[in-house]
Length: 442
Ligand SMILES: [Zn+2]
Image 1 (cartoon, rainbow, N blue to C red):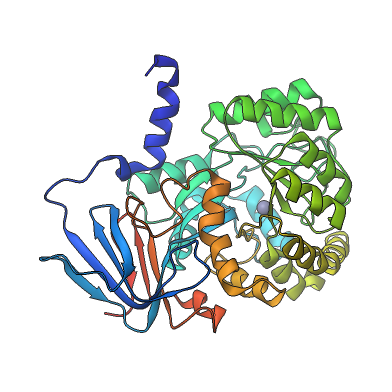
Image 2: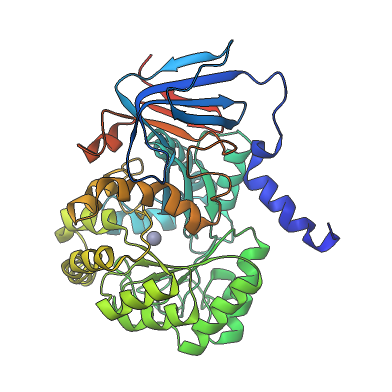
């Protein structure tokens, strides 16, 4: 291996932590048994599921497998074994679920170190809900140049806190006055500067290239950008484009040159078209996408991460938001159901992502039911939250299915999720990399 690839290799070793330490003779063997098994990719469940785990890794998975002698047997009874769930859109370092104005003030008042400690229960709630991997799409505290998401990812990987494996985006990249400009809506120069690349804010193709490089320099595994307006911001229209086509091309080109993936926050149809043409890897939210734009995604292989949970939560208390936010939420909510049905019908690749932080952490699995309610078959929803997300995140060689050689990220869903998808909200057992995080069946 040439020396110039070494940093990338080291980075991937870091993300997958214990996986790279190969099996040793002393690793204990665990045999998990349950009435059914979903392998993460098949179109049907199998009965009498067995998964054999040695150390951090799955050594076999299937129906009625023989139990190796000396293995510790954990019988999970009338449950369905599944790969650990994945959420392709979280913000573990935030909690936006309460009152909009209260939390806005609290974010400005609270010491960033204190905010960092407050992420620890968010990580635990997420993994206890069965989500063993998350793609965390943006973390920044106005006036701070800390990288709390990088710190949380690293602390979890080192075993200091319990939490999901994280791929993090550091600061989301956006335009001046756009969805990611945290100074928008406050008095001019209250913060004594206009945000720049060091806050993720960039105007012009070259500034965007610098912002991409800055995020990756500081530990980003994936790049996130806002290419249209958003709901929870005060001065942008939800569906307007925020980058020019030339800026979009620079964003995608620089990210891909540095061998990362690019996820874009996008509600609007025109911005989505330009982003998809430029070659983004995923469209997040996608509320107003028209059928021909969805067809373009299908043709180009672009993923859709619809984050139905976010809209659901905001609509549940829409009148508590400032009028500008409430109006945008209503418009997005009115459009998104038809968009989602069209995407399912057209066969667009759909990953599961929830925008956790908009609602309280740990309720991620409610997204499965929202997808099924809008016409996605239950096993397709489960694939979205396992193998499809693993493909989207670029980690399918390690996780996302129950197969020999994969990391032992395994959950048990009580009963049969194909007859009651809400069973995903009550996982009884969670294992990450061979370590039991939760077992309520004991
Ligand atoms: Zn988000």
